[in-house]
Image (cartoon, rainbow, N blue to C red; front, side):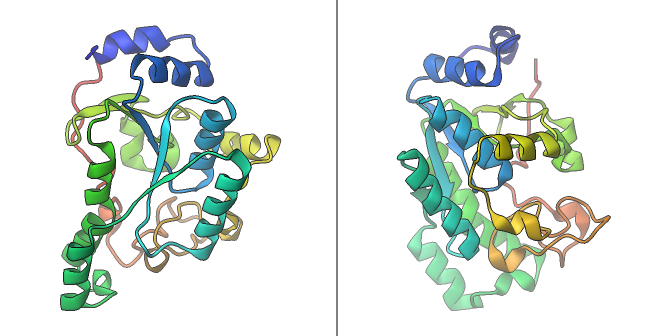
Length: 238
């Protein structure tokens, strides 16, 4: 495995598409992109599929997504004629949680919410990432305070692989323009005040002046607004 500084040097000066192509070639069969069908992820999906870049695209099917999200998922398959691989929660873990605590236990405590996120998202994610060397995401720097401290290329200590955020430096306006210019299907909840879209019971619209992620787990303290998918310990970025 090359160190991050060497990879950064090789990516320097390349376009976003060429950077993805380079990584797909260098780590053939071991590069994967996670989508939740939001604005940013639809932009990255278009970059991958429209340029025929051999990167596996997957999503976490939590079982609690919005109808609008399922619509975007289906339309994405229809438009690009490429598979999006679904990873589901383990049936026994999910059944045990719901049988014991009910379907909406996540409202009762932070611990219960983290348990639900682990079963529906984190454990399936670990299965999806297993055996891969590069994890592509749609993260942007200005999405939340902790993400501003990240870099576009990082070592994910928790999952033992490299994470690459190809649109890390894009603004939200950049994303919207790219979506519009390329006629990319997107989740209409974005037009109704949902900048970040997760599971339906855990996501609400954001009011003017509120933080970008205020609509996620709104009943909790602002400092706890990550589910754990990207809240892993990062090593040195050099």
